[in-house]
Amino acid sequence: MTELVIASNNEGKILEIRAMIEDIELLSLKDIGFDREIPEPYFTFEENAMAKASAIHAYCGKNVFADDSGICVNALNGAPGVISAHYSGTRDDEQNLQKVLQELRDKEDRSAYYKAVICLIWDEETYFFEGVCEGTIIEEKRGKGGFGYDPIFVPKGYKETFGELPLSIKNSISHRGKAIEKMVHFLKERIEANNTALF
Ligand code: IMP
Image (cartoon, rainbow, N blue to C red; front, side, top):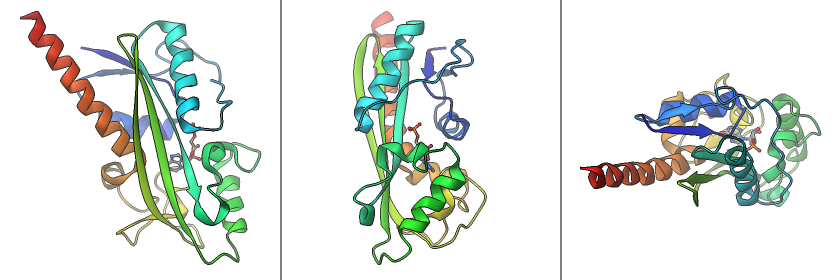
């Protein structure tokens, strides 16, 4: 089976991605023996995703993809954005989410969107896939599912937070789900074209 490395240590993300990709053997960083933090020093999702994918490709030489994602709150000028994972100065989801709630306390506009950018390195070429999911930040946490800011994010068209919705629904409408869907579509075409060329 075709192998593909996910350049992430985030268990929540890996769980979601595994549920969305079939027919490809997904390898985690643990599977390839990579146990360091990958630096994300840039100010855009694209650059960070590429930095992560390139670092892992240089390490193992395999086909690899990295996603860089975050939540952008309109009343906070797009913050936390690329620093969503450590907005409070810690990597603690609870503290990060509480900081956003605190900063939105007296704001009327509670609209926000999640954004994910995937960088795929496939047969030595680099490709990008993007997904956005719009919604609203509620005032108090609801639900125990998902990770990160999910308990305070209600996607457009729903009443429940991402912490309350089943993973299958989250994956069908989320930023990451949309980006992964685009990448999977691309990979299927690539793999089919290769198989056809072989016979
Ligand atoms: P990074 O892509 O590893 O830099 O981290 C993305 C961060 O954005 C996560 O640690 C979360 O704080 C936040 N985030 C991204 N996607 C999601 C999601 O689907 N649910 C909740 N939080 C998310």
